[in-house]
Image (cartoon, rainbow, N blue to C red; front, side, top):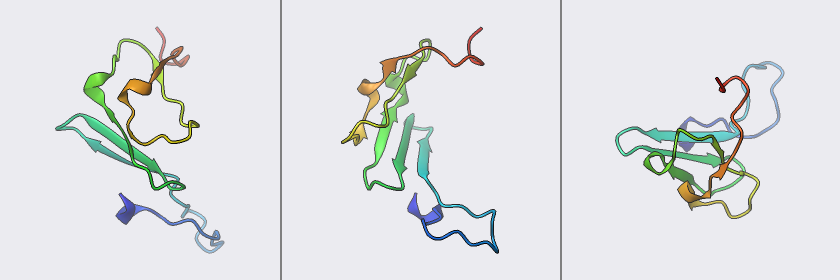
Amino acid sequence: MWNAAQPFGTPDPARPNISATIWRTLTDLTNRVYAFESSCSPDVVWTRLDALDFERAARLDLSVEGLVGDVSDRYEPAEPFGFASA
């Protein structure tokens, strides 16, 4: 994931459309895994999509310290977004 990331640094006024990478993500469709990491943390976090109930809205609190590894069981019930509700 790091190979395609734009590192943090001082913005370049000559190239205003280039910005730093904040999140890096990887989607494994074969094994149904979604992985991501913050550019501010070396920890990779992943979710096994087969473990989620897509009939119910859920959220993952990204502000929790020590978020690393498989977080499939750490999703909490949540209200759906307004545009997603019927």
